[in-house]
Amino acid sequence: MYDQLSPTEKKVATLALDNASVVSEMTIKELSSATGVSTATISRFVKRMDYANYREFTMALAHLAVEDTPQISSFPELGEGDSLSTIASKTFHYTIHSLEATNEALSEHELARAVLKLIHAKSVTFFGLGGSSIAAMDGFHKFLRTSLTVAYYPDYDIQLMQAAKLGKDDCAVVISHSGRNHETLKIAEELAQNGVTIIAITSYSGSPLAQAADVSFLSLTDEVNYRSEGMYSLISQLAILDSLFMMTVLRISSRTDQTLTKVRDVIEQTRQES
Image (cartoon, rainbow, N blue to C red; front, side, top):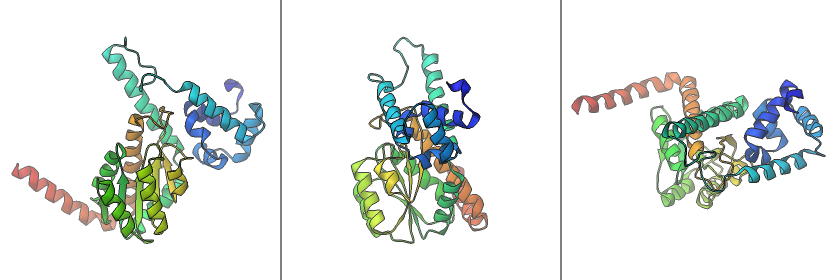
């Protein structure tokens, strides 16, 4: 029925077909925000697809996601007989698709809220474990160039202790592909109890982390099983952090220019010495 859909309905259909698992966990308001389509249009679309209500539609998507989840290879549609150039081409394709889907799901309103939280925070601490620690470290490394007070600690116990020290004037950027990691949720729980603003980056809007966050961003990916390694979601996480960094820098350029110059000068000295 795709060709018979209206332009707005096609936006909903495209996101649902390309990211069945993610959309299956979205509320109708979250899907509206991700597609830029009104909730009324989504309701009409659901009825047109012969579903009784939105809940029935998301349940069908969840079933579709389970059917489509690769059972053997963590790289969808890659075969042992593929040439090396084909494997590279497919891997780049999945990465590009993940970035495009993530970009389409970004909300102007949520981006504005996140940037304001970052700018006005007493301190900004990055949290991430396992594969997400790479993104957390990268975010810290970038924001260290700004006038903001930032922190990151790779060890879980130290992250938990840091979370216990933060308060309502602080901001935490918590990153988790699944949004269900027990240790990450323990950190988020501690942050919430202390009134810390939580900005979450995860692949699942219905995950406990997304629900606990004040602002959440979705790093969409073809890896529909939350137990997957999140290889494709990592680059989307990095892109979201890059976007937040650039937005923050441009909004506080007068405060950051001097800091950025000092950081560049120090780094340049180390290059000259080597």
